[in-house]
Each structure stands twice: as structure tokens, then as C-alpha cells.
Length: 389
Image (cartoon, rainbow, N blue to C red; front, side):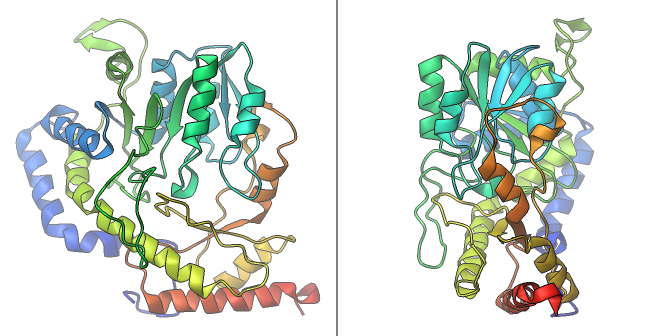
């Protein structure tokens, strides 16, 4: 392990990921500095081209955050006050926050049973004459049921905006070998499965910047043109503003660093899948622990367990006392912040009460994972004792 204390396992280790790239990152910084163009400019244009090529889309629009990518994506798809956007109640707040900020109504539908993703049947039932967009989330790096959701959208003349903040590199077809290896990129990618998609480059993401950053992808020329206008105060030329927009332009320095990191993403994804496969083996015989399904294309932004019977918080504390970090993504459903729930959302509420994410990152080694498994086994046993005794 790369840690001084082999019995301490952090949730994420960004330093270990970045250290081998330091010479290339330094060179990218010097290149961007020498250009004298620090907002948009050639570095951003180059990254947009490279990202679009990697994802298999016509357009990639660099923005300053994943949240802005959602907001601008919704506006570019025509969402406005009073419109309805069908989405998941089990996600980070930005998913519904952006809908609310536009004066639209997030309509929350339930998850598929025992999963973390939108239930297409529930989506179909929630469509009304005011629905404009379906907003699925590829949560934890697992692809939503895009074929079914796109069929619903086509039937009702709706648009689909992917929240792909946690899924850069996830592909609908991704052959996986016995040790988690994936063949060179193949199949349709997250970001190319709907009418548009929003990505985040927050540093903790699988492809993270060294600060904030975001991307909107689309094959639609008009959506891309509108997004580029919106990111620049609604302007296509200086001091001529066609509509109120945003100051949401990707920094050249972040683009330069992302260009360094993008070629390494597939190798990092392979490493994450190997880590996930080891967890699957190490944790398979722990009673009461439900491991995630290794779905096709999953890029394991998080490795998220289910711990039923109200033991989640006690297990998390047991991990902490044994030097293992964990996190709850997410402890509450988004309907509490506004919008409208379609039904009682029992599967989403159960997920919010049961989920716990373990450390996962490309450099997580077998010794560290063995300690996580030991700590989890002990914490689960401890939580099962009456009153912790």
C-alpha cells in the first residue's frame, strides 16, 4: 500500500493517481501558461475535440461544472417554467436543483427493485402533457436503462438528458475479461445515449480535473450551438446578447490537465473493475451484505453495498474505528427539496437507508482491500449483537 499506516484506508487517494502524471501535468501547465489564453481558447477546443472523439459524439461543450452542464443542457433542450422533468429521487442534489432553478418541476419516480437506477415502467406511468425531458442518472458509474427510456421518449416526443457525472467512460457494450480487463473502447458510450448528456470533472470523478469543470455532449447541432451561447452570457459575439445566459466557460488550464488524464482513463477503468471484482470475492460470504451487480459497462465510480435491517450507520462507525473510510451516497431522497413524487418511492427510500460506499480507486491494492474486508466483517458482526454488546 501507498499509505504509511497499512491499516488505514481512505475513501479515495488522488495523490497516488496524480503522482505518475506529474511531469506531463507540469508540461501542460507550462503550455497553457505560455499561450496567454486562460478561458476557452485552443486548449479547451482541443479537449472538446478529444472528448467528443472518445465518447463518439458530434459535439462536446466545455463548461465550468457538472451542475452547469445540467442547467444548460435542460435549457438547450427547451425546458422552462412549468415544464416537467421526470427524474430519479436518488442522486446528488444537483440533479433536481437544476430543474428547480429553471422554474420547472422535477417529477420523481421510483428505482427498479433492488437497484439504484430509474425504473422505466415507473417513468412511462409518470408522463403527462407537461413532460418535456426524461433525466436519468448513471449512478455510481452504472448505465441507466437507456434503450427503454429512449423508447418512452420517442413514443411521447420527449427529450432525454443523461446525468453522466459519475460515468465518464461507461459504455453500453464493454466486454470484460476474467480479471476485469476491458477491450479497447467499443459500443455506445455514456454521453451518446440520449439527446444530450452532462458530465462533471470534479476532482473525485473517474476523470477529474484539478478543480471544477463540466461538459455537455450532444449530436444535435442546434443544442450544441445553444449551449455554447448560454455558457457565454447568451452571446455569440462580443457585446451582443441574444438571451440571459451564464458565465460557464471551461478554464484552459483545467482543459490542459484533462487532456493529460484522458488517455489514461481506460487503464484506470480496468483497475477499478479489478478492484470491484476482488471486493465481490472478498465480501461474498458476509451475511447481510449485498454487493453491487457487475453490470455491463459499469465503471465503478463507487462500490456501493446494501446493508438492510437498519445496521448501515453502525457498520459505518465500525469501519471508521478500524481505519476504513466509507460514505453514504445518498442518505435522503430528493423529493424533500421540492418537486413532485410519483407514488411512494419505496425502493428509493430503502436505498437511501441501506447504501454504504467502500473505498475504491485505481491504486487500491490487495493488502488494503483485505483490511477493508476484515474490517467490514468485524463491523457487521458487531452491529448484529444486541445493543452492540
